[in-house]
Image 1 (cartoon, rainbow, N blue to C red):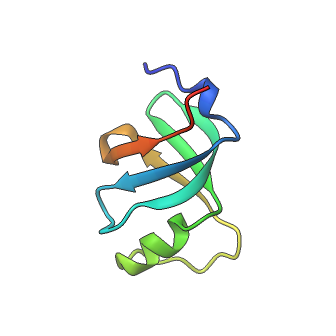
Image 2 (image 1 turned 135 degrees about the horizontal axis):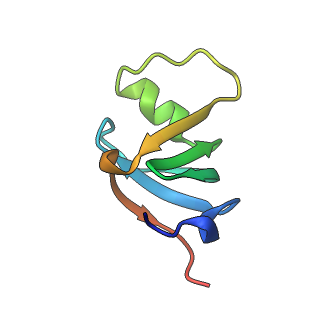
Length: 75
């Protein structure tokens, strides 16, 4: 498993397979199979990709296999 605990509560730029553009979002939790994100442009990016979204404040789980790349501040 990847060690991703240092990403919790960090704003990242994320590109996932289902979207045509990268989005800024916040990592809210980590799981052995992926990361949970909330806020930023990820919900809008998924809506542009045709994924149904109707929630005002969504938390989105993205499996590691669907993450093309992720940029975070190097601390």
